[in-house]
Length: 259
Image (cartoon, rainbow, N blue to C red; front, side, top):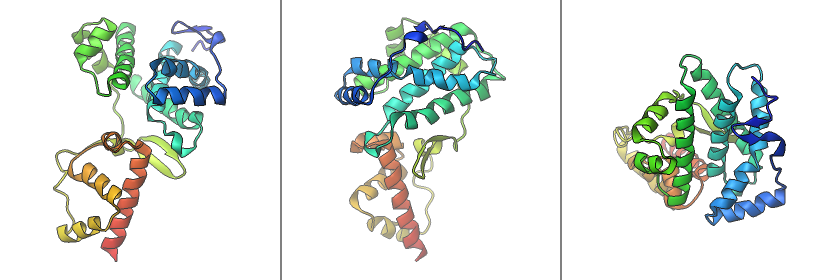
């Protein structure tokens, strides 16, 4: 893998900016206000982080441009899910997200080879989806993504399907201070959301004893089948906070049911 390349995916890596902590804080404040220019500046200011991570895969035969684009997707996901209230450095949060994205790609790309043109369409579509979601506060349709990047709906669907990677439900998304978010924490179960009961009356009593916010989260997650991201958006808190409150609630319920 030619990591000595100066230009990767059209980006001159020798001229990548480096943001100070003060600049990051200022950009975060603007991002919180919906400033898309600040978001772009923040992403560009952290591309060196992606570059440093893909160097760990120097023994890989994968194209460096592909790994860089995959790493950028991990960087964007990290930015969208980062909770500043946790008082964790962004790089601490972003590194496992970027690494996980690249490792899944390498793991699953060994058996399936996808053409470069399809990969490029898929990466553009994923990036456009992230941008439109942030801009419109809802997930865009294939038609909207098509209009954004100027590619037909059929080509987008084919490209996204071609790069789909199987992911374990137990793949960690983020871990800090003993609290780990797994893929399964972000998936709703709409089929069995009211079928798994252990002594219905006792469970109801256990739920009634929870604080109001934890009770609401349990209701939204397990009785209305919503994902942690959906709950976080509805309650206007971070996904990490939802995860922590959910785990506290379940621990309290288990204790009540055991006693």
